[in-house]
Length: 327
Ligand code: F6P
Image (spheres, rainbow, N blue to C red):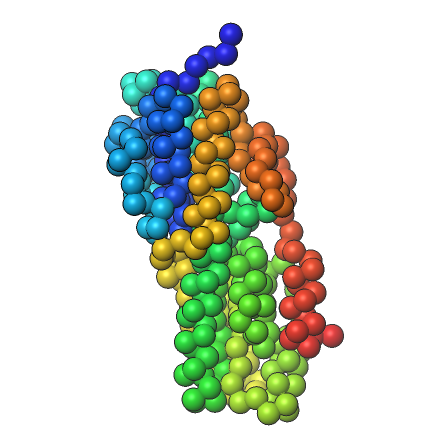
């Protein structure tokens, strides 16, 4: 007979992302709807080890979807990486009577869930990261808002770059991946975009587009660099200044990209994913990651999901090259 799930713990872990709160709300309310108790674990795996929790019910998650950050706080725990830490986390789950856990985060969060599943807990992961670098899902919660936040800042930078006839080099987050930088670059109409997935031909991919724009009459330039590129935006800025004598300014957008009220896409995706996560556990499934493939919400075995790899969208990369005039 299927083991009924009576109490589910939910937590957020790793870098926060806009929309995590909407996912928490969806988990808590779906639990309530299905007659399951919901416990929020604060501060990710750190809180799981230390029994740091708060009860979540229908009312305690109201007015949450529009809020950035995560009401459950987030953390990265070194202790949880040790077998002793994992045992302590399991002990907390036993003490709180948790039948199952939902972790919202990235690959590191899913690795942790796998360790807990190996110790007998039922677990489901929800992809939440602005980096959009979870291989099994075409979309991760927070990505759209982060793109929009970066664009807003870049539009403002453009104004002052135009006034001073400068070259702006903007570093966009994304950890080791260039998804965020590439999309932001396409959306802002960048002069050039540099991502870690493709080796850069300085002359062809960076300097020539700037020269061509200058010859076309442009006097200000926007170069987008993913943080995963070696040396980051400062290295790229120096190359430009040395080679072109353009007055160049580097801006690292940094954590501003992780904040703000989530976009409708992030609120909606997070809500569906939260609902799906509870549904899977209620159906007796475990060790799954909720994912989006096209228009469809699907789920994968965590081990399988962690073995998958995600490459930069080739079509978007080609569009970027076409629109920046790179041969
Ligand atoms: O994974 C999300 C992310 O914001 C990455 O883009 C970035 O590399 C990293 O987290 C920054 O982490 P921290 O919060 O530790 O500065």
